[in-house]
Image (cartoon, rainbow, N blue to C red):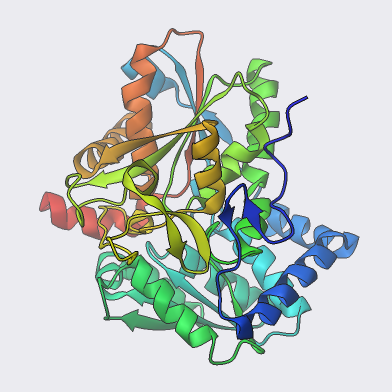
Amino acid sequence: MKNSLKLSPNETGFFGKYGGQIIPPTLKPIFTEIAEAYHEAQSDPEFRREYEELLKNYVGRPSPLYYARNLSEKLGGAKIYLKREDLNHTGAHKINHTLGEALLAKRMGKTKLLAETGAGQHGVALATAAALVGLACEIHMGEIDVLKQHPNVIRMQLLGAKVVTVKSGGRCLKDAVDSAFEAFVQDPQNIFFGIGSVVGPHPFPMMVRDFQSVVGKEAREQILEKEHRLPDYLVACVGGGSNAIGLFHEFLDDTEVKIIGVEPSGRSFKPGDHAATITLGTPGNIHGMFTYLLQDDKGEPLAVHSVASGLDYPGVGPVHSDLKDQGRVVYETINDKEALQAFLDLSKIEGIIPALESSHALAQVFRLAPQLTSDKIIIVNLSGRGDKDIDYIADILKL
């Protein structure tokens, strides 16, 4: 019998050959402490009870699985279901893992939550969780993203977080990660680094995956209730990859379900014009992990671009690298123009304004659904809402 693809990484944090803890020896005890604390928390019924109670009564889970009838009829072909993570408190899937991180940090006696953010949704979610559990919060954000996602900057500040604008390097998500990590190593005894995706040193790729897996667990139950069978396709956007693995994880052993991750091809496939990490990258080291990344001949991360701030990252979660090599997940690309058109189309057809990140997954569905027969079912993870993007969109469209 084939081994389950839902298994956790090995004891050193590798999914296949990807992952690990590529960090200075002085930081090893810190991350070992986090891994041990996480395993203890996961086996503590009280921790699970508190977390699940917050998901239900604070986040508003389960999020609906919505049959997009108008969109399905407009495109023709497959039936399209939207997993409505945009309806969560704070407007995206990020709250699923930030609540877990905040509860774990408080359990460990930490006094501050610190993180990076691109689109700002992780930053808002972590600031929200910090306010809830009574911890200080500091968010590092690239200068470009601060300008693009200004409403989320205001939200973080209103929630009590300190927002640090990163002006070095490409001034985007990768540089925010670098800056946040530098701040973390100054006081790792008191700071908990609430990493925003399934990236970084072990145990974060595993831990964030576990907290996000609620998305797929719900979607599986919901589609069985509505259609009495599993879907034919799952589709989600991939930057670091947390929303995608959240949906995918529960279905990995169901080989009849085809799974598609969607990366941003940006303006073009020229270096610096895209963030199609799995499609065009090669294995290497970034931010404490071994994974696919866009890199130069010296192993340095390349500049990246996406119309969606949450996707402009030169690496990807190691679990996605492993799934790519195993062939279990197919990774496609969508460019800026296609994503923008999907953003506009869903808004007008279904009355739902999606995040630009989620719009990449939607654009892939717009491409795929008409090719399929009407008995086929697609679930797309609508990972966030587009409130944060409307000022940027208005500027692009001259509204």
